[in-house]
Length: 340
Ligand SMILES: NC(=O)C1=CN([C@@H]2O[C@H](COP(=O)(O)OP(=O)(O)OC[C@H]3O[C@@H](n4cnc5c(N)ncnc54)[C@H](O)[C@@H]3O)[C@@H](O)[C@H]2O)C=CC1
Ligand SMILES: O=C(CO)COP(=O)(O)O
Image (cartoon, rainbow, N blue to C red):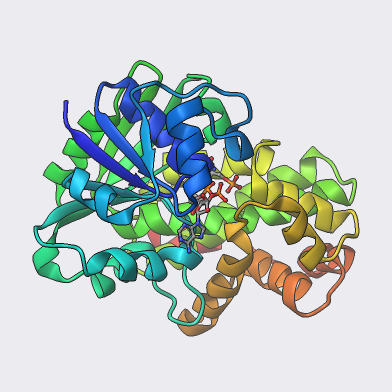
């Protein structure tokens, strides 16, 4: 058993701290809000994010980042992509010994077009990081805290670090695989949010399962096309962090991305939707980043392009669907010809 720190007490940070604490680790959860830290420690709930769900009594929370960083040499970062650089900037000055950093966030930064582990490499001096591991896969917090069977992947270029993370989190309801394809795992986790927003839109428009299946399948095709070009292993995209996460996010009512898309499809404005959600909808900023990446790498990503136009260029959701359906004719396996 060991000490573990989780930074970010939203739905996912709290659910992961729940798993770690149930595994017997001395887990300290950091929230930047004191009231929330007190609620977790004293009432064993985090109502804003996980309703009435009771949290383990050995799970403690703090609003002191210094205390959180001193608690452990394993730091799990569970804040939205947008907050990443800001949170690192706050703790980097406190670091005095190297630590193992695990991140669980599913986004790509617009404009810089960096994946999360690249941001971490940029912001955390090398002498203070042992390794970086990404934990990703089909896993809604709401189901994890109900101890429903869940499978995820710990990925790192340092496989022994990924195995350490596997050991920390593995339990009878939380199964962890390892992978060394960090690019593929990070891209799959981030880009599925773009497709989940689109899936929510087609549901909101009243279209059916045919449209959903089309989006998931052709979404996977465009994610794999970009990913392979950026150096990912194509097989990663048919694994948990690719196809697995696409399925769960495009079909679950728990998904904030799907729910946001659903409201957009019903005619709500993006600003109103984001205000109503009150939780991070990573797919919005990541659509911008994915669109920029597709241009930079000259890779066709039609679903991303249509969603970009709906989110940022005032194309209506229905016109977005028309844009996809009326594209020029294609061979289905165009991307896979090189495998023949
Ligand atoms: N919710 C889920 O089931 C899953 C979420 N994720 C990923 O985990 C990441 C975090 O998501 P959630 O926990 O769901 O988000 P959330 O919206 O539930 O919570 C985000 C938390 O980060 C905190 N935060 C926001 N800005 C901050 C800042 N500048 N400094 C410090 N704290 C800040 C918020 O106060 C909140 O506690 C996202 O990238 C998401 O894609 C991954 C797998 C599952
Ligand atoms: O990544 C997730 C499940 O694997 C969570 O998805 P949402 O952010 O859409 O809720």
